[in-house]
Image (cartoon, rainbow, N blue to C red; front, top):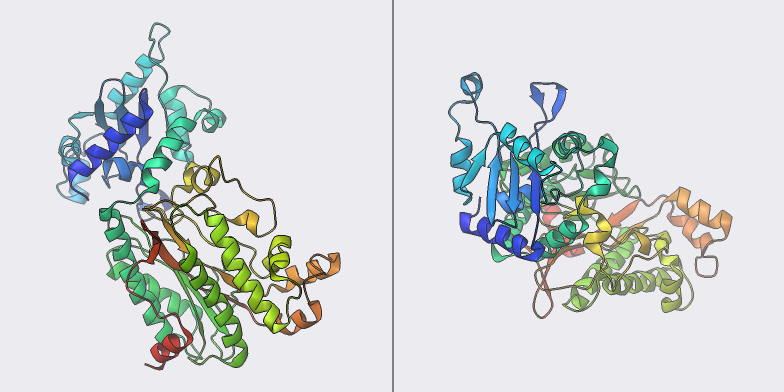
Length: 465
């Protein structure tokens, strides 16, 4: 937890930006896995963490913008709980640790909000964010007096935009936490590289990564992607045996104890040596990754960065004879997206896809920059104008997806730019993705964390160990 003054300042800034209203920020509940007392690992809601910093389940934070007061509502543990858990802080003690003076039980919260529902009360109804969990949606429906299906549509857009504005700019303390998460990711990825030898199974490496994450005092930040079938963008199956000739995509990150995230991808040749085909495609993707780093700076949109990386990819594919024609025309048409049907990156912080529970369009775009409808570019999660303090991922890739290639060929999509005869030779290749976490600075950007082997030479040297 940060010092309490940080949380107090965050709440005061939100109060200032909103100017009015009573804001309800529910924390998360425990989630049963297969019966009530056997729960999944508890993950606190990120907005609650940002403004209140407390990890306990069943907490509700309230920020009263009109009266300048903050509240924590929860029920204290009783002796039946303490028998199993040992002594735990009271709600009042937890609240004090983050600079909140006012506390109450969950019944007192209901009484407070119920009073606002009185016809004689002229205070507007509470403001809240769109819930992403069914149990929290049900809580809000009961608390505010809404029908369950209508809860999302009554969420406050004003509150969403105020939270996005504040959380988009990462403080020095937040960046230090993200770099701590990347340090753990370094151990995860470098260790897995050394294990990526013929005869092993993907699940062995995925399990190693999960262990390294917990050694860093946190879980993985999302389910590990560890696959020799990298042409499937989010392949969570781990049952394939590693064989020479395959590229192994390793997309994984960690959370710190304070839940700040890392998100790193490295792709390595099974056995530790790139063959000519693997090296050719890898160097093209690496060139796009480095081009994005070169051009990222405040004032440019990430949509423009995506297009700059796309030109590098198109140039490389043209050099191999996979694409043909003018590079700018290829990118404008979207033909290169046959081999990268996703966007360059997304915001990152307390969530690995930061704040996307607010609605991805509200986080990744603004009034000046809107999403594209073009295949590939339309999947760009963050396209907005960059500001100092943004942390974003830079993750170009190349994926030879047989079903997509066959579909485009049958439909004649991209026929002016795609050499389908040459592309047939690559349908057995798989995929490659290279991902770093980058901070937008006052003058440009920097890659966060300890450098994780990325060049062909660095990867081969690491795997030789």
